[in-house]
Image (tube, rainbow, N blue to C red):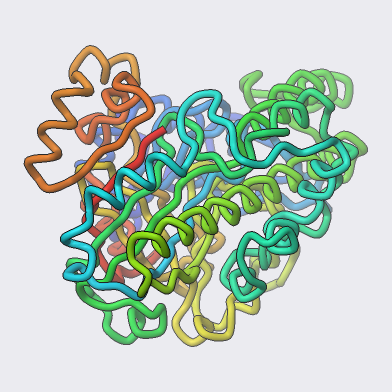
Length: 476
């Protein structure tokens, strides 16, 4: 990225002042090396977001930002509905509420070292993954509507987990303003047998080992320690979320044209939050969030079944579940006043600081767990949100390593079978639904997750709590 238009205004914080039709500045959180690796389109897309009606304070790009559809992936934008603010399907993304759930197992590395192969084989056999993967549940239209309205609550009521799980999911596992009537029959049909599936692309299930604790006090609050075994689930709303985006984008483009909203780029098609179409999209998108949370809840129970069979001493509990492709109403302080904003986070994670009322009681004193995925060959991290993040970025931070090259480039550069062998030499077991998919997700196709996390911490958006190394990775 050419940084000529950016002015350094703090540690890992760069600002581009408004020019032309921009209503607010652009803020990029990154060090110089990460900035240099970013595509120029990241800055252009962030500038485009800064032109949308009702945008507040700044258009923000995180250290892992890269080019996306409409918003950059790693982009954050908050909009005031009382100032004509908009909601954009391109600002949420097609995989609505794609997110990460971290599970504690109550086990340490020594307890699983001798059964890694069996554990990997069973997880790969029991966790549906890959393009077109189908789950054990086949839902009728009425049952789909119940799931879209109930989210993880619905899954628990159906026997997948306990009510204790719900306390450690954002929104307690359910977006209460979801409206399944706003979701098309086609979207629902795509989801009838996909609840409880990983999907494909960068989605994964990973068994991880805590290899470093950076903040003992926070780690204890999160219930984790050195050598603990965790499980990470990364997946979203599957075909339903994609179809919701596909359904609403052309409608938003027509709405923008008819209501005089000037779009800097057609991919930023949007509707005013308080318009009929805006409310319909929110009802559908909140349903998509519930779908993703139900999906991860069902998968959690499948993980519990496998661990109970292989390691009966395991006690699998939810550490936290947080999404990174959403737009949600939240209260934030702007210019000294507390107001409700609709915060788009596309490839960005919510990172609320200590004392926030949305947090479970166990975490209020320290802040929200922030779950950062690496790659199947590199570390992942657990961070904790900060009060500073609330002021700098609407309580947001990075979501992972961020792609450094396209999937097409990756499969030209690496072969899946070679990667499996190389990672086996590092004692990492890879189970993939396809060899091509493994090549697409090669560790070298991503940025350095350690640099991304370091920039995030230096910028004040979150603090490191623990580093997790992969042992087993099931890829879609």
